[in-house]
Image: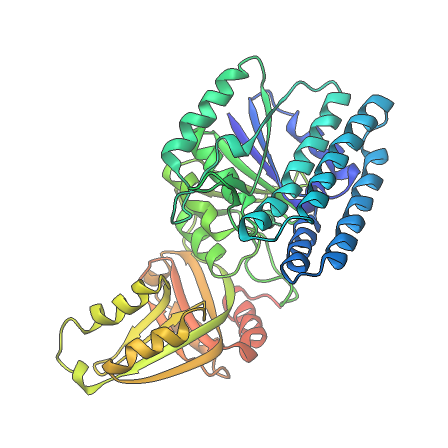
Length: 440
Ligand code: ASP
Ligand code: MG
């Protein structure tokens, strides 16, 4: 079994969908295809939910109509026969009728999730109509029947596998399966989702559950690059990454892959390939157990970081101090990204200010607290780079003009992270592109 996931731009136009159909029928291996919503749809659905939440039904209605018009235009270019067009129009009609009904109900969080789910339901159903028209045998596997999250919003691995396998068993005669990315059921049985960009996560979970031979993530760029192409002039695709390296990169800002997506595939040792729909022959990036080569592979940046510094002479020679500090973050379910300590101070960074006030209040009894916002973590990732002799000297030589706030080195063999004011992000990435990769 092989898993192939296509993102929003890969299904965003009728001709792109036609191309996806070609790509998924190339091999003889049984394949589960995971689709995102058409590009722009989830954003539009978020907008509809927002208008409704604000009580602005007229605006919501307008947004629904605009989106519906977009889908109606999509159909004649997607399928040609009258039968297929009628079927596709019917599908679009049903989903937009649902949105129009929702418009009349009083708004709730649960309802907003129902709205968000329409994108993936529409893309998979329309794609299925196209496959049918082309005479390509396949089955639609409803993600809402096997994908679920628990009360902590974590995927319920133990039930995903048997449910998916039972569905596959029911369609034993087929070799091609289409399912929705992103959407799932929560612990209350309601429609929910795996958060924005979560279709990658679906793909990885499905690949792990099906113990797939490979999990292919098809997007519109040719793999993970050594630096952010939006910031620096020249970047190159990385051939091979280990799961650890890929996780660090995805988490620290490489937009191509959703950061949570790595671990399910990693657990089952399913290789993940990042491929480009616009350039299907390009090698892309392969993520496996092995790193392939030693040395620095990429840098990535993560914005919106807040640092909290706790200074206290009571920390001197004390034990248990760090535990007490960590407990505060645990209580507010706020993950810490970076940490550095000296004998009388601890600095940590977090990427969400949601509970900042409460956290600071609870930390105050431990010492003097300083908070700094608008920071960026620049992460240098590569295999065994902590053992690479000259990495620190190269790094700091390159960064002479940058006021580095924190450095984290040694925690992982694959990562050195530095914290800089966000206003220095562009300059830092450019300096590292030259200093570490010899690129412009
Ligand atoms: N359609 C969802 C989003 O735009 C999920 C995904 O595409 O990964 O966030
Ligand atoms: Mg995506």
